[in-house]
Each structure stands twice: as structure tokens, then as C-alpha cells.
Image (tube, rainbow, N blue to C red; front, side):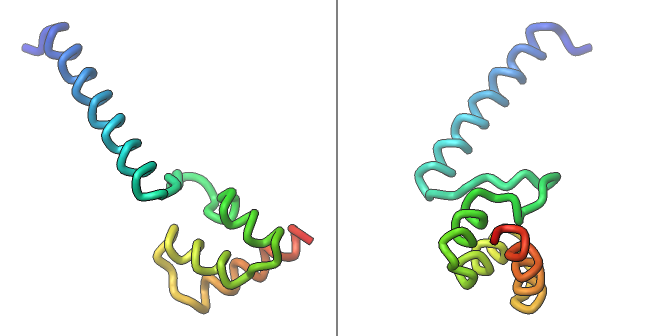
Length: 84
């Protein structure tokens, strides 16, 4: 049977692991992408498009999603229409 102490221990461990993961993200300068959100809404992609740097936006999109070049270009082309 799981006790309240066991649950507290697990919560503590989860918090510790989350802190470590945040540290790694910061250290590697990686932005966490929520899998439930649209990667095109990423601040990095939006900023690249505002600067007119479509190639950088495509590269970031591919890093976030693992998609191929053609698919990423199509998505960024569509997103670019809403930025201008």
C-alpha cells in the first residue's frame, strides 16, 4: 500500500527531475516545445519570420518537429503570410 510519505517522496523526486531538466534546457539554450502547441507559435520562429529570416524559421521548425525540409518549408510559407 502506498502511503502519504511515499507520495511526498515521489513528488519531491519529480520536482528535482524537473529542475534538472530546466537546467539542461537553459544550459543548452533549448526552448521547450509543448507537444500540444503549434510549433509555428514558437517565439523563436515568430521572431525569425518578423526579421524576414525564413531559412532560420524553417530550421527551427525542423528542429522542433523533426519534419523534412519540404514539409517545414510549406508550413513556414503558410505561417509567413500571417506575420506580414
